[in-house]
Length: 250
Image (tube, rainbow, N blue to C red; front, side):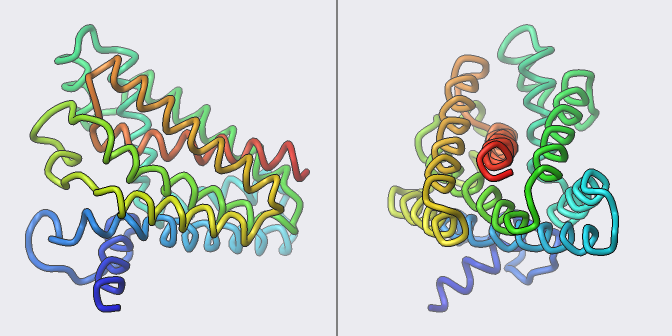
């Protein structure tokens, strides 16, 4: 039980801006094992964003405005961790001439044209999808989207080679099969608890397809994974799931 609580604290500290105590150093020793609880923390983030969105709707704000403000709160809560990864991947893959320049561009903290466009498209798509969801599925949809989009990341981290040996992904270490399987199972359970079974199955499939697609693209573009690649996969999965749920449940 202590291991699970330690992993929960580590996952919360990494995936959110909430202050969580952990040992001194760049990466807690249990960071890799804590991947198994990424879906649980993701579900909590989704619930927070969903409840805020419903509160704004109840106060009389238009659905589009409520969705945009709620997603903004979500970005504040997470420190835009995965959004930053998506933008870096777009800049690197879109503007780099070769593997070395792609990796260098991804490491650059400045936002480029490709990254800005990708963030705009992703954010607008999520806002439109969330605004379309009826009140009965706003919280449930966001819980499932955030849990499933993070639940596939340990499997990606386990299977993809490292694109470089000095980045966040390489320093963090590689989850084992048990960790990846636990994360995937927890994500599926959460989705099936909050969504109709057909919507839950479709959302899980969307998350898996986005992860597989990003893994294939990263392998071709830079030879493997970085932390940005994993963050970009999370954002693609989250966007795809919200789009699917808007189509199925609206």
